[in-house]
Image: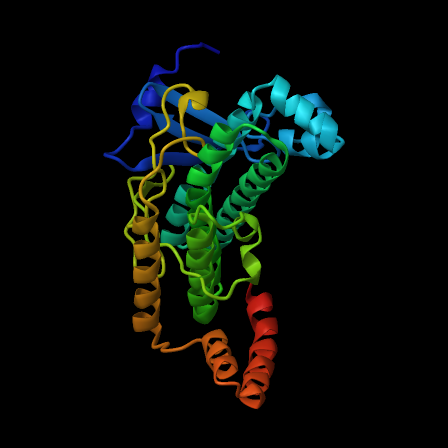
Length: 320
C-alpha cells in the first residue's frame, strides 16, 4: 500500500468553517474516526484513548494518575510540566467534536441508533476531560495551568449539554431535553464564576437549572451534506469547536487554550430551550413545576408532581 494520501484528502474536503468528520472502518474492521484538517487528516480510535496509546499500561492518563497516591500524582504532574495532561485533553476534545458532528449527520439522515451512540460517546469524552481537569485542580500547584482549565471548562460543559440534549430528543423526551439544557446553563455559569469552586462543573447532574445547546455547523461523513429539521439538527447553529484543530493534533487548543465568551454559549442554549418549548408546546416542565411548588412551599403539590415525574421515567428509559 502506498504512503501518499493525496487521493484521500481530495475526496474528503473541508467545507467552509464546518467540522469535517466521518466514521470509517479500519482494515481489520474496527470503527475509526477521522477529522479533516487544513494540511491533512487526524485519525482516532473509537475506544480507549484516541491515539490508541496506553500510558503506563493504563487505558488513559487519567486512569494512570488515579492509580497513584496523592503524593505520587503531584510528583508526576510536576515532572511532566502537565504537558501530558494537555495532550490527553486535546485528543479527547478532538474526538468529542467529531462524535458530535457525525452524530448530528446520522440523526439528520435517520440513523438514530448510530446518532445515539455517537452522542453517548461524546458525553463520555466530555466527562473524561472534566474529570481530568478536576483531578489536576486538586493536585497541581501551577496557577497558570489551573487558570487555563478554568477558562476552558465551560466549553466542555457546553458540549456535554449538547450531547445530553440530543439524546433526549432522540428519545422524544422533550421535557428532559429542556431540563438538560437548563442544567447545562447552570453548570456553565457556575464554572465560569472565578469565586466559585469547580464541583458543579464535574457534577452538574445535581443541578436543576440548566440549559441546552443550539445547533452546530458540522460536516457529516463522506456524504454530500445533510438537511436538518429542528429536532434532527439542533446542533446546526451551535458552536462545536472554538478553535479549528491544526495540522498537528497537539497544537490545537480545543480544551487547552483561549475560547470565545461564555455568554454566547449560554445565549445559544437559552435560545434552544425556547425552540423546544415552541415546537412541542411545553410551557413548564414537570421539574420546573416542582421547583415552583417548592418555592411556594406547596410541598403536597411538589410531591404529587414528583410522583408523576418518577412514573414517566421508565417510558423514557425504555425508549432509550
